[in-house]
Amino acid sequence: MDTRILIVADDRLARAGLAAILTDRPGFAIVGQIASADLQGFAWDVHRPDLVLWDLGWDADAALTLVADAQAGGVPVVALLPDSYAAQVSPRDIQGLLPRDVEPETLVAALLATKHGLVVMATPFVAALKSADTLTIPTLAEPLTRRELDVLHLLAEGLGNKAIAQRLGISEHTVKFHINAILGKVGAQSRTEAVVRAMRLGLVSV
Image 1: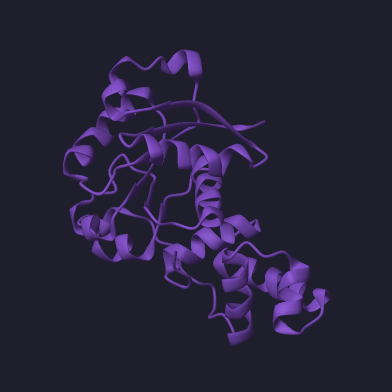
Image 2: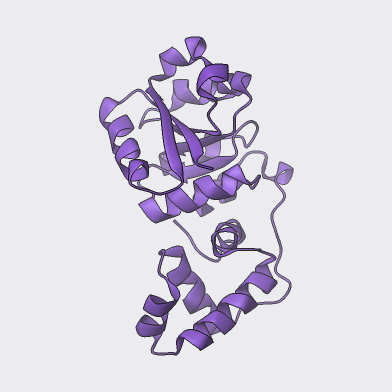
C-alpha cells in the first residue's frame, strides 16, 4: 500500500519540488500540497495522509510553533528546516528533522522509517536538541569495521549491492555478508532501517 504524503510549505516552489521528488517514487502517493495557513481547514479524515512532510522554510520561527498544531490530525510530521534552527527545535510532536538540502534518497528513506514508527534526526539536530534526553537513541551491539562503515556509507547514498561491489572492488556475496553484519550490529531489520539508525548513531550524516 502506498505511503500517503501531505506536503506543507508556504513556498510554492518548495511544494512543487518535494512533490516532484516523491511522485516518481514507487510506493508514495501525494494526497495534498498546501500552505501552512491551510492546515486549519484540512480534511484529515477525507485525505487520510500517513505522514506530513513540512518544509519550514528559511525563516522557521513562526512555522516551528505551527508544527505542534498539525498533530491535531494525528499524523507524524517530518520537518525540513535550516541547520541554524537546530538549537530551537524540540522533538515533541516531530518524528523527523532533516535539513532543507537533504538528498532525495535520504528523504525517501527517512519517510519510510518514520512511517514504521522510527524517529529520524539528522546529525546536526541530534547534537543540538534542547530535549535530546527524551529521544531513544539506539546503541551498537559492537563497533562496525572499517569495511562495514564503507558499505554503510554507500547504502546511505542509495546504492544497490552490485554498485557497492563495483565501488569497493569486492564481490556481491561479500557485500551481502557486510550488510547482514551491519543489520545485526545496529539492530535493524532492513537496509532502510539500518541507514536511519546509523544517522541517529552519528555513523552517517545527511
